[in-house]
Image (cartoon, rainbow, N blue to C red; front, side, top):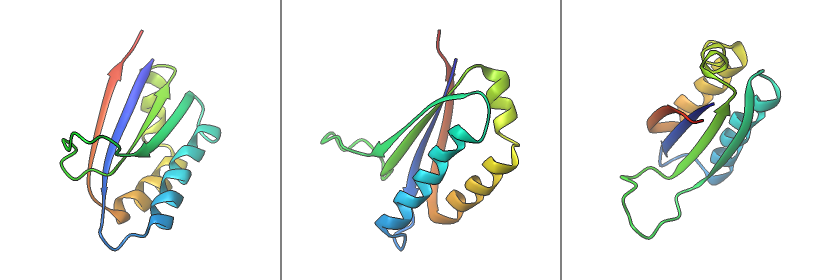
Length: 99
């Protein structure tokens, strides 16, 4: 399995509703693109303060690297990616394999 972790820092002018809408559209890809087995998301919630300004995250779980590789250029992903990129200041995407 592949875990695709995305950390986001939204632009200051982006409203809470726009953030919610954006993340919801990211999650909807689970029903549109084969190979996605799970999607979880949430806002930063630790008192530690080590988030470096990143306020929200999501994790997409893929069956395997091949599924992830088909997701990246998928047209539905491109639509959501472009929306996300228009609303964020900064993003970190990090993938890793799990047993």
